[in-house]
Image (cartoon, rainbow, N blue to C red; front, side, top):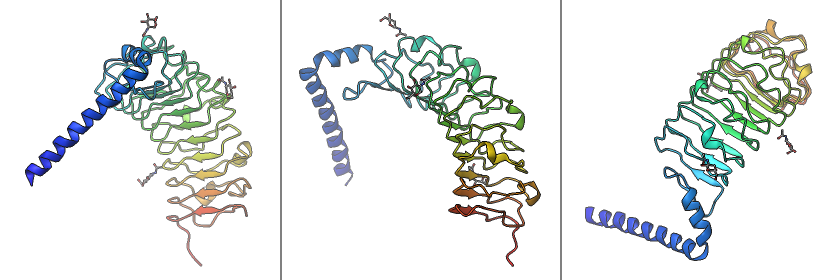
Length: 297
Ligand SMILES: *[C@@H]1O[C@H](CO)[C@@H](O)[C@H](O)[C@H]1NC(C)=O
Ligand SMILES: *[C@@H]1O[C@H](CO)[C@@H](O)[C@H](O)[C@H]1NC(C)=O
Ligand SMILES: *[C@@H]1O[C@H](CO)[C@@H](O)[C@H](O)[C@H]1NC(C)=O
């Protein structure tokens, strides 16, 4: 039995390395120049797939520093390493980058050099989840479409951080340390295309003020929000998905028209302190009200 298993493992191993070698030979025969070019500029610590020359895989390697990124790269995978800093230097030729995944590292705001991110003029997606950021990094490239900052320690948003991000559609700040005082009058001004804003699991006691007019999905679960100001929804006339589960909403905290807003399709209010079913609109498709204090008559 044991011998059979050993043999199978051995056979798989051999087959696998033969297969790798065959793939390599195929490229050496047919695509010698491309293969050589990639071989030369591929950082030693990373993997450059011959069939996907715009991608660079450097994830799960215990890296402490970002290697020099070749200019041909569009997609950069650096997640799950021990990286603390984002210097400008390794990115100086990486003008084509569209996508950077730096989730699960040890990046602090002090470690991010001023021009490191803003010099990436074509960047669309930036993943920085599970790091040690205390502020939203700034400045960011104006081209950015998605900014993922879940599970950091963000409590501050520097003035003007979002003011040029006209193409940002998704901002994920869930599971951070935001208090109400994180927001200035103009914090969200300029986010003309923002559609999803996630601030679940922070320490907000009030609804975030002056949200972008195109917001469709607003996720605020697991805060300590007690009320919603009168006419709050007038500035976000497209809001369709509103999640406020696990807050401290009471009947008295709701605006006089409740949630009678024609754009809302999905309304989640579980785990609050409501004693009455709030006013809703006839268009509403999903309503979650479990774990409140509503008595059935
Ligand atoms: C950028 O490109 C120049 C010219 O090819 C090269 O000398 C330099 O080392 C490159 N920088 C990085 C960080 O790779
Ligand atoms: C925003 O997106 C549009 C359409 O894709 C593009 O033409 C424009 O250059 C982008 N803006 C920035 C600042 O990158
Ligand atoms: C909110 O907290 C509850 C209870 O701790 C948890 O089950 C739920 O996943 C949390 N939701 C979010 C979006 O953080």
